[in-house]
Image (cartoon, rainbow, N blue to C red; front, top):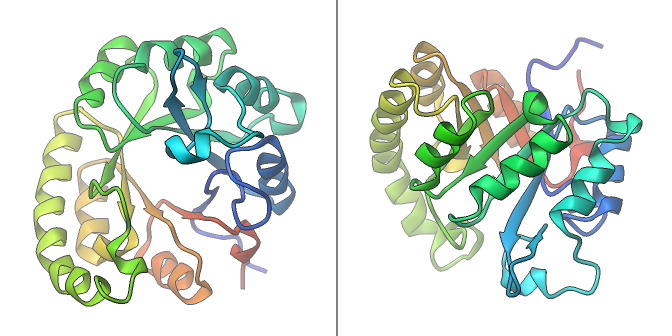
Length: 234
């Protein structure tokens, strides 16, 4: 079978196989053969940094700390695997970077975030780490609900046009290295604009084989999925 042309990224590890942002989910992603594992970092009351997408999931009894997650991902089994560390809020960039440095993980990590104020902070604190801007900024996916989906699709064209210009400007200025884009705003033009600006384009969150194949045809850098078993060549 021919090799895949994109990087396979497990969302929260492998959220459709085992609960996301857990060691079991990371192990499931590893078993599925991903090239990169994505996980979320959030600060909770008391100052702890945990692997959680939001405050509700941070209250789960199986929630783990950033240190616990990184200690697992730095073991020999994960040697060579890339990490996408997604900062859910601003304000704890230094602590995350310090934790990555302590384990010599900077070179294989991409730090991503929707929080625009975090981008210059991460860049100044650690110029060597790859930096990704997640677009568009949203708390809930309007495409996931039948009521909001038609309106979201109507607005996607205008969003694509605006986003393409903004990400190109930031890439050319060296403010970011990668764009993490929702699949609804990804088209051939965005792929071309990002490539011409010297950046990488990762698409989230793609859980349908047909859409994965479409994104591959577009020529994106990487595809992020909750179920990395969908990443097959052929």
